[in-house]
Length: 340
Image (tube, rainbow, N blue to C red; front, top):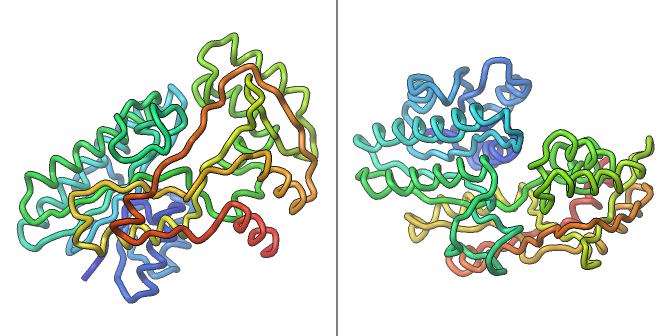
């Protein structure tokens, strides 16, 4: 029996693949030519086929013989110029994974779990909180829209293809522990560090919450840019009402646990589950902890915008799957600093 994981060279897929190998499963994946993580992935015992999700034949070859599929691969970008790449990877790629899985399901039942994102709601600007799986899907980014289309395709194939049992996992913001203390981290950098936030805002007027106009964007940059410094200070931002920014973040290891529960539980078939932490964390509490652990300075900034607040509900996953996140953001920082 082989499990196919798209995106096994990435953060979530790589952790998932190693966890499945540890419990005795064979794992295969499809990696892009030149993927910098290809060698390490092969060394971990993962069978790697080189190709592209946008090619159905590549996907079919990599998935041959699989009885389970975790579709984790996706491009995450909020840059307007990345829309063709987002479409090819997240929409065309997802259709190809589903077409290949459907062909296999004709011969033997096949289990498929799809990784979606809370960008489909989106939780930061949700109509209500905690945001559960019944919330209307109203993405405000092109990326979120591609994940919404992916969900729709998964539901369609799950309903119309006999033997193909599908489920959807909606991820909250996901990190590995070491990323939280990296000022150049792709996601944690803009969330917690002044310099990375400024770079992110300059790179794209759409890759930040709340600033919906050029004037708002410039007003934020006017406040944050003078705070940049070579020692990579941390950012503690307050919104126009004086409320500190909050962060909803889940450890990649908890995501892997949730994915395995979704895959293994028969009652999860045909269902969608938010994989979220138990509650969001105020950065007024977290940033001082991060500062103490790393020895970095904290720069406070009062921004003339609404920052938005995330609070995804994991109640359904707790009730049906027994999902219990184990690692808090504070635990992750302490672990990462201790490992250095």
